[in-house]
Length: 423
Length: 150
Image (cartoon, rainbow over all chains, first blue to last red; front, side, top):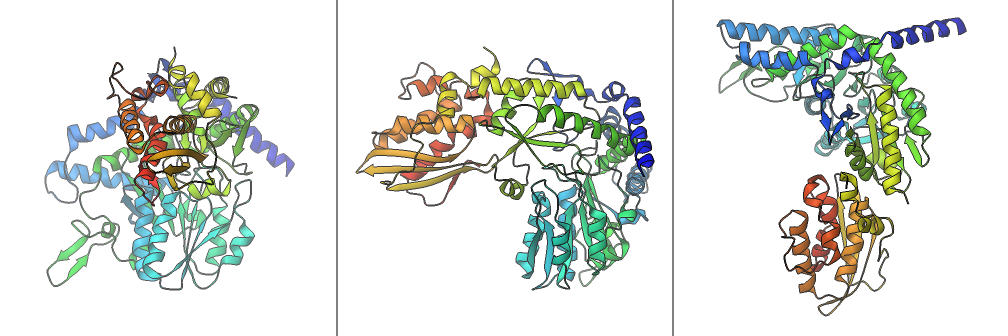
């Protein structure tokens, strides 16, 4: 066992040593600029990732050379646009290892994906007295759609508690499962704490009671290798813009049998087979859930972003980012007055912290003056803030284009904050 | 002076770290909550009105350096003032942080004007500066709903 571990560690060290971050940074034009006279240090990738040139080029090339509507025209451009748009769907399918491309529904992002399931699955399968289980570390987008559903149906929302490290209490979760539970919806990777949740175990437990599971993969998709068939999740939601793709595009993966059994989300063009005033027949998957002209350029851009991430390799990205996070935890954690929120054993990409006597917003402003972009606030996870008894935290979030030198600059910046605002 | 020092003036830093009138008023006739939902700043403002005069004022809660300093200086400024005078101060402060108050204008903000003179260059922090002032105005208008800067 020890020998196996050592081999794993050596493998990771090799990956990190070979990771040419300077070369990668060349792919991101935005990283070349100065903010307030200082080189931009971007530590807000959990809010949205930066975009490589290939993605920017792909979206503008679409408008310059290919722009046309999809699934509508017999003319050349429409066929070209349709092919590129559908090719991107297959890229997404392979990226998360879905069985079929029609299990990939284009949406505006994670929020819309979750709303789609809450609405369509909920309308069919959730009734008064039923229960929906979420966790105490969810983003508002995996809380509010379920609350709305509960208000409409009379179902009850239940919450898996977390410990002080920011880890889900799995034993308590197991106790919460019963025949009234109609859905379990949990984050794969917490945006506020950085916790990687044991979603495979959660899915096993839920499935042993025939309960479907939705995984909010907004933070996980750009940082961890996702395999929906290995996880055996029923739904997986993620956003393009956090995955080096454009804003306004994302995806929902759903197992065919669920998607088949759910009514449409929105009505309109493209989602129908035939329409008369007496009766409308819906289109097949995935189009049943894609009403109206979609974000075609966004989908093509997301496909290119996935090609880009895959060319580097999610395993290599995860290993490099793990090293960055360990380094940041050590360097930032050593600053006097720093408190780190989220100390789970399994963590990725996020360092949430407070500084004694200094409000996170002031930390954010003083760092911004030095060209360092972090997020300050509740991270759209107010219940998490409440759980830890703080109104807000400062959050530095990392991506594979960040460097240890930038983390050193962040530490310097925090010392500057203390110098200006410390009491 | 660098950007940081222009925003966190000595006066703001002083009031923000050690706010004045940071207390609950037992004698309050008006109590008003104000919050900034985006950043979680949350204050409760207490006013003791005698006729038309703000006899005493206090506030409690939590917020950033800017919002705390602004609340501290606001409470100090309106203590002893009439309703009408306080409303005039609100109007002047509102114009100040949005850059609509000429620096040579005949205002009544005293050292508040200098301390917050850089706010028009910091649009992302105007909400922090103005939170307690909106709370004051809502209290004077007798609102019972919490006031929000959104």
